[in-house]
Amino acid sequence: MENGSNWWNEAIGYIIYPESFKDGNGDGIGDLRGIIEKLDYLKELGVNLLWICPIFASPMDDNGYDVSDYYHINPRFGTDEDFIVLLKEAHQRNIRIVMDLVLNHTSDEHPWFQRALHDENAPEHDYYIFKKGRYVDGKLMPPTNWSSFFTSSVWERVPGTDEFYFHTFSRKMPDVNWNNPSLRKEYFKIANYWVEKGVDGFRLDAVAHLGKDLSWSDSTLPVGKDGTVLDTSKFSNRPEVFSYLKELRASFLGKPVLLIGEVGGEIQPEQGRLLADREKGTLNLLFNFDTVWNNGNFGSIGKKDEEIKTDVLLLKHNFMRWYEACHENCDMPLYWCNHDHPRVLSQYGSLKYRNESAKMLANTLLFFYGTPFLHYGEEIGLANLLEAPLESFTMDVGTKDSLSSFRREGYSDQEILNFFRRAARMNGRSIMQWNHDENAGFSKTLPRMPLGFDYKEGFDVQDEMEDPYSILNFYQYAINLRRDPFINDLVLRAPLEIVDWNHPDVLSYLHRGNDTRLMVISNFRPYEVYFTFDYQIADILLQNYDGVILKDHVFTLRPFETLLLRLR
Ligand code: NOJ
Image 1 (cartoon, protein in one colour):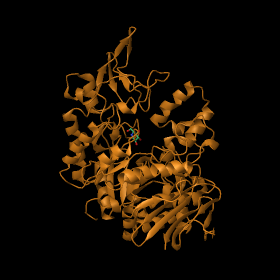
Image 2 (cartoon, helix red, strand yellow; image 1 turned 135 degrees about the horizontal axis):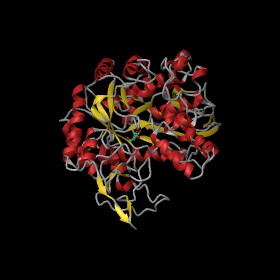
Image 3 (spheres, protein in one colour; image 1 turned 60 degrees about the vertical axis):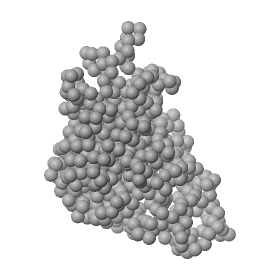
Image 4 (cartoon, protein in one colour; image 1 turned 120 degrees about the vertical axis):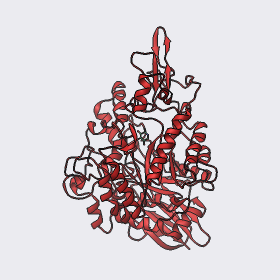
């Protein structure tokens, strides 16, 4: 394996949701043995960096993001030993492993929280955030009017007391108190424990929320019917996060540990640049999600399907505002989605043009500036759970919480189901479709997680491998090209510009290298569009249709047509 610093600049990342990827022991639940079985597949695809969603011991309220023991592997995914074998087998294939480390909260079943809850004099009591409620007209109310991401208030009452504890996500995930140095030390110990075992880095979950507004004052934003409001300024991307992460980085004593931060919460590129600065920053790559929902789909329950349309202008703007602010000082990740989003094929692509649109999305992403991350299944064009029942979606605690509020707001179950099939995050957690065997070759036992609607039609990896024009083969070819040192260098170092900012349907960009210019042209529409082209083609490196229709300096781009061109 290359040992240099910034090794992630040569990486192609792949996100694995372990429960849904591959079952190695036949119990219907994906696991580490299953991942080991598929390492050769991943290597063949060209992937050399895996981010595996949480595998620590957990009661699984939020599918592993609620950790009850950071030092042990969740038995449903295997043993501690299995993880060591996975590390060894992956490293032998030059594949690096990044663990998903949850720093913002634990499970309420974590011994720290149990001690904190039952003994207010225990040191662990200050590992969490407890506050007394307020009496309003004789009624006990939460300490502030802040809303959490999942349920309404961030505060949950401690039974039998007038105290509340703080949770940014579900009630079973109390936030830890990063303002307490002993708590911070516990996390540094945990991270270093796994580095000693050989992990190459961490994806730091919800890291934007480690700092809270310690004045605990009410938000002045307008509150909803439940009296709360989601005001991210109260607990997202606050300056303390920077110093906490600096300590975490220092705890690795110079080892090249990759730190990938999940930094939603309306972070701005200038803040991102501070966090990820190559010289002075603390994180290496930041996932900000600004390019994920650029079609009006987020929170779109009141909208009809026809109203969801990719806003190509917004996509260009969001890709470029981060590129422009950061590329000189920071490395960046490139991604369409993860396990918290609908499948990108259903988001920006089209089932009708599955092959064309999946390839278009691959080409558009892979050659932009940054380290690409594919979400498992993207390489075969997996789509949303278009036929799944309501229960498949409410397996997810976040979605379950939203079901009750949608019902209270008066939406019918059919309207809610349509919305979930379009936007819920379970769509990105469906079973990986491997072959024509039972349960898409995932397991001999009926999986706990939902299977895609098309697995019985033989839509799977095996099928895709056999077809030379498949999405999978396109990905493999494109990844190979992207990993070519010359192309990789051009993509990462040559200045990048958007071609035709105002084109509402086409996303096109150009890398201006010293002797080589590389251009991507992608039609995001399920119909033909025209695109003015004032250049000379030297080579077509990638395309998803036969030939090109180019006349008088105007391309006619077919539905979701994409091209990677070397220009003269
Ligand atoms: C972000 C994770 O990606 C998501 O799945 C989880 O629910 C929250 N953080 C809370 O840990």
